[in-house]
Length: 406
Ligand SMILES: *Cc1c(COP(=O)(O)O)cnc(C)c1O
Image 1: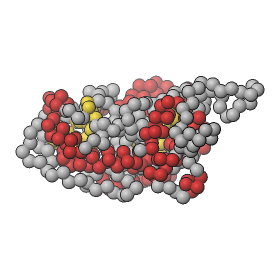
Image 2: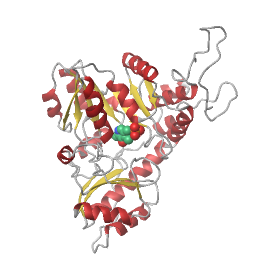
Image 3: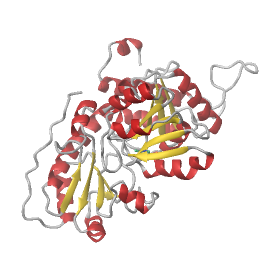
């Protein structure tokens, strides 16, 4: 994006449309060229135009990385072949013996990467409830090198105060880095680096891509020093996204603000509908005033997100009946696409977490997670109504108001 726009501290929707989207210098093409090339001609050995080999650097990926950095309001970003590949690069910053404090409620694949891969190489992970900042500060030792937080978390949508946590960590443990998984919020709803995070990771597979057609991940950081290491791992280990996938994420980013607005609006109405349904137990949605993280969500997010989880009464049997009756919601893993998805963490996304730890984290056999899409919300609630079974008393669909305008 041109520097004039940047210095004006442009609105996020302007950023989303223009980040990494300057016309092609060779042809003027408005849409980013997809450089499907592995290698680049060198005039004489060692003399080239900044590109040698596409694992190291590719012009389409460059554009995406610049766009991601601008969106997160930091100097640097690196794109990876998946969210987990991005997380893997962050964990490579650690050395054997280093300890990481991790939020207990988190993406199952992240848990697996930590517990079943990196733990074997001498890294230590302690899982705890990060929504209480004192839990984190109480566990910090001289060996603590990383604090890992998902907020809102997956699948219970608990909220951690990033600014307070960052301040406490940097005061008590200057050697430790704070990494926030911003997949659920996206930079449209929350910018963790502005709140003090040292690293921001994304699964671009979700809202950033937005159309359930690619896998991708990202690491963004305000630190040139950290960036240098991440970029080194990106090239050395090679888990890079293809230029075509980079193009598709860039295209997804163009509509991120309008999609997020509709996702959030639909999720608010869906949460309200669920909370009034007699077949539904607890509803997990940070937009509700009685959600334990509501005040923090209101402070650090611009909207409450497109995810809603709930307990269905009757456990597994009811859940299976519910899933078999859905027509518009697709039963599937993943989230953040334009289409609504319903997921059963117990046997799907969180099956890789041992049952005891799943239950300790609050992931029960009655828990259902919805990624609310951008369809007509009345169609979505009618679909849920049909799948939950007939109910006598229904609350009228009162929307929960967005917090801030974008
Ligand atoms: C999906 C997801 C990941 C992993 O990303 P992939 O692109 O599937 O590798 C990490 N964190 C969160 C919160 C996710 O939802």
